[in-house]
Length: 110
Image (cartoon, rainbow, N blue to C red; front, side):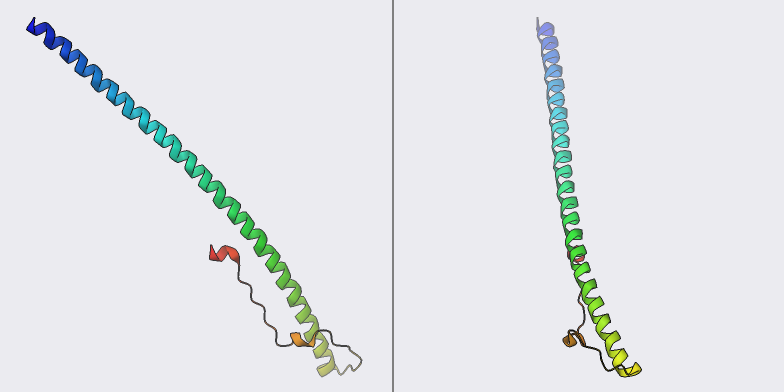
């Protein structure tokens, strides 16, 4: 009888070990799935932020480009007055003579 109880106990112990191992493996699988899901959400958020930053940088760049064209136009008018000697030029925005542009992209900050 003692031998029969030992055999049953061993079968029970092995069954418990297998059950615990399956539970641990299942928990690890669920954890991996959850981590991958979190990573995908974080990646999506990062890409959306980058796209928004690039859009804002593009708007800022285009604004600065227009400013640069205005400054260039003023400098060409001043050149026409000073070097070529044309007198009948009406200067637009003469306060831009000493203006400098500052382009500070948002994406660089992030």
